[in-house]
Image (cartoon, rainbow, N blue to C red; front, side, top):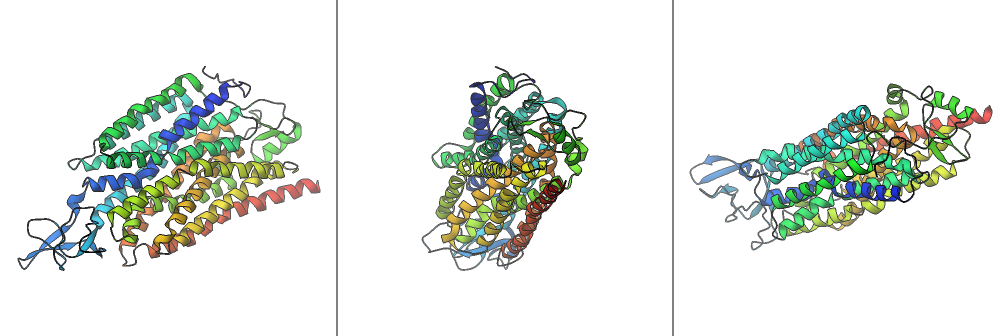
Amino acid sequence: MVLSDSSNGDIGWKKWLIAGWAFMECLFFGGLLYGWGSIVFVLKDEGIYADLCPRTGNTSGSGNITHDVTFVPVKSQNETGNNTGYIVNSTDATLSPGSGAPAGGKDVICKPQDSNYALCFTIGSALFCLGCAVLGHVNYKYGTRVTRILSFLTFVAGTLMMAFISKEHPWLMFPGLSLMGIGGLPILVTNTQVSNLFSTGSSTFVGLLCGGFDMSSAVLLMVKLAYEGGFSRQYMFLLICGAHLLVLVSTFFFLPREFIPRPKVKVIEREVAENEEVGIKLIDKSANVEVNPPRATRPSLRSCMLKPMFVSHVLWLSILQVRFYYFVGSINQYLNRLFDEDKDEVSKFTNMCFTIMMGGLITSPMAGIVYDLVKKLCKDGKSQPYREVLPAALPLAVGSLLAVLLSVLVLIPSTGLLYLIFVVMTLFRSFLYSMAAAFLSAVFPSEYFGMLYGVMIVCGGVVGFLQFAFFKWSEMYAEGPLHANIFQLVLVTISFIHPLFLWITCSREEKKFKVN
């Protein structure tokens, strides 16, 4: 039941099967990178990079003094709460001779070990974005099938490396996480075109796919829970690797070799002229379906990339994504600081965080639903930008508002706010990635989606390197990430420029048509 490159939305029940399979792929294999916090807990428990904790130097023969280590009080002398296995036996910040462990009635935050985990996620998320641009170009040039085959091989290589991380080969986590992320994102990108099979609610479907992509971070939570239940990390990643064979079903039997086109309908002359001016997609209002403009009037890829609305959209994504990446990449350190390295509490709230993140399945379509509802309110507009672009301003602004709220909440060092923080973060992520994809899908020609999405994500990846700078910044002060979080609060407010720009631009276009 392979869709031909000339298939349209009238394929009956088959489109629901294809849509369901697309959602399943995103749910189980799309965004495993974002479950990094769960795997950090497992890797720490296995002692990966524990040999870096701590660096030592001799002191007057009585023991070894520690460096790059922060000591925090434990709740009582009888609580271990120590996920690095250090021995606690005196009040001095010294190492017991021959033990390689810190002594004293205090627990330990190992900065070199945490720094390696933060660097791994920084590199992984950056290459995740770069890989999206590369595979987006492959998708544009060679179509869906070639892209998905390369994605499959990349994901398999990544999961195999994650399976075979050990104390002797800890470096495997760097290419493993990167390749697993790079191989997962094209699953979302290539399945977004399935929305073309639906004449209405296409933005809602894209939001649902993003919800599955968001919820896939829970797969690594399942790995953590299975590890705590007695299964090895290696076994679980080998299981994920084998299950990934399922994506080949859609690759060879559901999706076309090239792309799923939008339904072709008659294009009225006024819309063609407007498309030449604005460079966006066309719509037949009587049929209520999106259409591809004639190739002679279709804007070039370069012109789409240079449009101010695309540039501002990239800025919006880049700023908010670094806020999200920093939170996910430092969640383990954040919880350890709040709970004074109490391993049980950190484990409990790590599970809670990624369990709440599974709510992305519900919250991600919300952005698309809001987008589609506002479209209905604007459907009687005279100009195409007013009908198709302006509706995005509201959900984009909500995404920015949620980022501000998250940035304010993490400034308050209270364990009582953690549930609210996790809920806000889930909503924030849903609006961030749902609108990042839905806006491009609604505004620009479908054959450019892969390239435009890739360019947007790689720009976000470059800016994403700031997360490691924020992490190192937080190590410089006794207050931890306070200064970095204040700076990010100021930074995310800049993202409001994008929805404000869209509102001003579209309102001006509408006034021009009313005057004429």
